[in-house]
Length: 596
Image 1: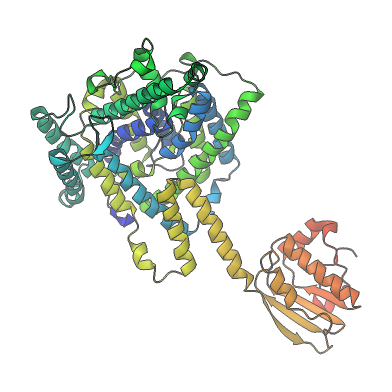
Image 2 (image 1 turned 60 degrees about the horizontal axis):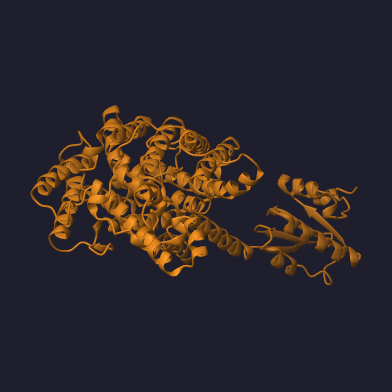
């Protein structure tokens, strides 16, 4: 199904238009992930700008889009909640330095170790996660302050416009490819939505068809209500001493299921400062002043207090930075591999690591939350014809222009249009052919694919899913090859017994290797021929050493022949750890007698 994205060719026009399309789709994503991280939506938007710009210029995969992501947000939310937002920015900077070190160390090639079944599970699980994430756009805030699913006319209108968006994206390329179908769909549905919303409204100032601005105000209002109710409950039940302690704790620690509360503490705290928590009324839609308009980003040390640069601070931020580094690089390199497959080109993994690191370093310096490659937006870009670096640069610059000048217009974009675009991403991302491949694939590969996809869907952790899949695939590989060790036995004219080995000798196969030899019954002269096998690790060397000691204790001679250069190198490196006393015998082309 990834062929769905291959019909576009690259050009400057396509890069510019696809960049604009991606920028429109980036706005709600960046806002949503900022709420997840517990920071201001503007921080998410600024992060998407810096990440998108620097990875487009310096990264190793033209056409790939980076920005603030959910995988990174769920890591930093604990840091923000426990230590405060001031510790976030040094952490992101350190994460960038670590990613650059990985790139300069040329470790990006490790992505080649990801097996194809893991890639299939990753792609399919990702498609399901993206689809499930869109369900939140079908919710609205009830009178009681709870998020509930739409019903009645708003629901049917939403579904109709989502279907219209998907239909335009599906059918327009058959008529013309002069402009990206996704951009045409967004603009068309936006015009329809504006016309509908001007003639009908629902609760308060809310529109009949939810827009990007409505989404932001709804999330903000829901967070304020949760914060108000939590303060009231604690104030009512706690002792005076506990109340004092409670006010010093981050709101995210108070109500862990409300990801935007840290942002709300900053945006709504001034309004609540003069009132007692128990007396604060539930805010209505009119009391919420939220938007994406802002100025130019500034260095974080001009906006927030500086954390002390000492060993204690390093101990706090280093574990978070390491996790951010790993999560960001895994997602970015997996996205790079996916875009490589779609575009039938090859990106540069090590350069991408350096680009991601540089982007996160600058992002942290200017008060960003960090991020990595965004698979959904990258696929939108590819589907819209974006193949060059110009598409990513355009998306980043357009995003900044939205914040500086065009916020009121961008807030009018209906969520239905963006949901429709993402649903088409889901359709194009899911590898439908893998369903048919199940009967032809080995059972172990099917299980790995299902495991990775299931873990991705349940845990929403793409990086851990990939690591888990690689580990399971490696264990399956080791188990299978542990049974592939065997030997052909023959005798030469001198009465020597020759074991001609087949299969790899490593930690999982040493037991089978030892069972092949009958030391007591073998003749005085035994040869092990390694022409068709290789020794891969210390366990294999130790097995050879143990076998040699058994033959020596019985007064018999053991010869090794046709050892590869790699095997001899392993023996030399082992030194005294592996002691094999062998007598040279040119007749057997003995390859090693290190102690002679």
